[in-house]
Amino acid sequence: MGVAALVLGILGILCSFTGIGSPIGILFGIPALVLGIVARKRARTENAPSGLATAGMVVGIVSLAFGALVAAACAACGAWVKEMNTEMQQQNQSNPRVKQGFEEFNRAAAAAGQAEGDPRGGKPALPDVKKPASEDDRK
Image 1 (cartoon, one colour):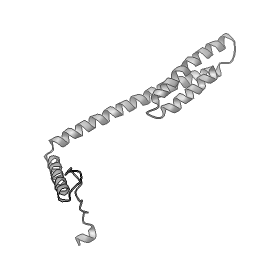
Image 2 (cartoon, one colour; image 1 turned 180 degrees about the vertical axis):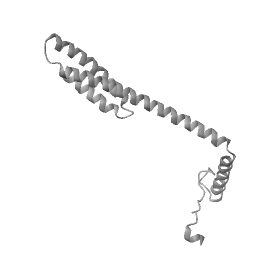
Image 3 (spheres, one colour; image 1 turned 120 degrees about the horizontal axis):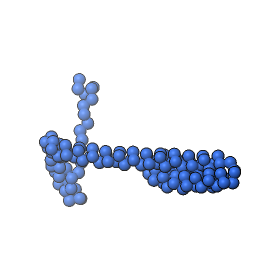
Image 4 (spheres, one colour; image 1 turned 90 degrees about the vertical axis):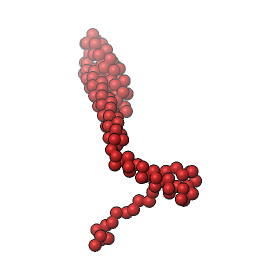
């Protein structure tokens, strides 16, 4: 049981290194901890060495803690990104220059679609973007 606890704990730590795998790391850490505790108690009653059981228990605890930490960090980062996205959208909607840019883009795209016989029925298309003048062209 001590070997199983150690293996599950190591797998839990490895899975916890990825944000997506952190719940899997937690799921590996729980049985590693339980098996480590049971193996340690059994080793004490049988007067056997309990080194692997202790190691499995410790690695299971580390797997649980690290998996929870990574999961919390990923959740916090996701919430922050969502908040920043909402804030940027609100700023863009209230900015008259951004509104004007969108209106100009839509007019140009509609004109380009109508003038070129756009098969999509005049849906907005990207207008030709002019290349900025280089240093040599300005002289």
